[in-house]
Length: 292
Length: 272
Image (cartoon, each protein chain N blue to C red):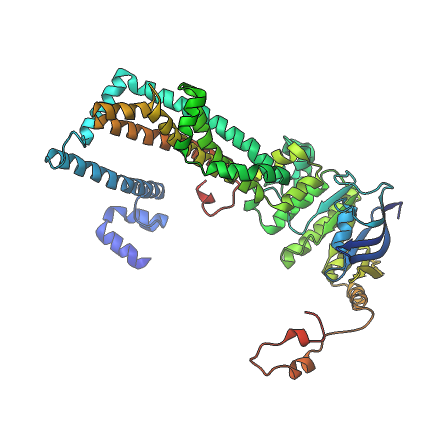
């Protein structure tokens, strides 16, 4: 301590009182230091993308790549601003978000019901699970022609496709979550006279919640993926349509803008679920529970 | 001693044609504290599950206040070796679990929190509790419905020796306060003798009662009381089938493989 103090006095005379009286070590206020450290970490996350953007802009400006094929970030920014100013961007975003919300809600709700059935009843598992596992193996795009044939080209086939996409991750994770519920806790539930729906609601559902959130987040990201698949093929509005439109008009800036908006929306909606997850799983005794 | 609270007579109980219980009969009057002591596999935990109504596959008759055992009876509480708290509920919510939604707001929960010394932790989650605190929460949960009979299945065997002594005193104080009858399964002879009015000693294969020791000593008891040690020795004798018996392995080990080689345990005259 004495040694450090001497050094401090030598180099930072103004700080001596802080060091000797409060017993503080020299440096910024601890809260400020934590904040700086955290922002230091966050700042580092921006280094690579910003660097790439600069390289991208430079490469196009130098004429090494044609601006027609790879519009520079500045042009994409302009396109996004134009789209926003004309209101078209919000229309596309609104339509796509609504489709994802409706499709995801339907798919996830069905997955909850079927998952509870299969997870809790051996017989239901024997009947349903093999079929569902087989259906899961079908690639998403294979559904599209069939859905168009059956449901026309309106909203119905798109929402159905998104619901199919959201269903499986939620279903699989929920069933796995139920299978992992501690038998001893179920016995406690039984001792307190819980049966049927009450047992599901008070023991199985909360105990399977960590898995369920994993499934919901996976389901939501697949819902966005299936949305693009649906809108690429038959749509007059939505971000997938913007992608098709950009390709047909030969405007790479539109395509890249749509991709960026899709990435932001995906990240944003996952962030909402992540926030919900953190707040409803504060009880979890896991490695990273300190962050909650 | 008042009326008989628990009248137990299990003639036979088998798992897969293997007889685990053979003709066990005893009665517990209201307010008595009884321990079941015996080696593993003597069926003491099975007996407890029968009384709790969790196991119905047996021959015999069991009566609690004159009625057959049933799951979720208001007369019977059950406490396990592990606390078995719901990790997603707070201490208060766990204690009030039986009451359902908003069970943690019930005045009885607040009372119990104070009684088990957790008045400062109603909102803590199980992951934040020590082993002793978690088991105290479980005890409070078991006492919520004010059961006349509290069944305890090796309730203190998972905590350290100091916590165990404090929990023993806590359960005695709570039993005295509420007039609760305790039926306790334990492996710990000192615990059985210290806590109980009567220790029932069991033997295994098949599970049966070999005798009982009555502990006539007023509470609060002094743990170092010589009489307790004498009763403990009596229990130990009963456990060993009436002989003073210990395993002398010197000859067996000498006849075995030379030092440094693994011991062929299957040739030993006793079961490990």
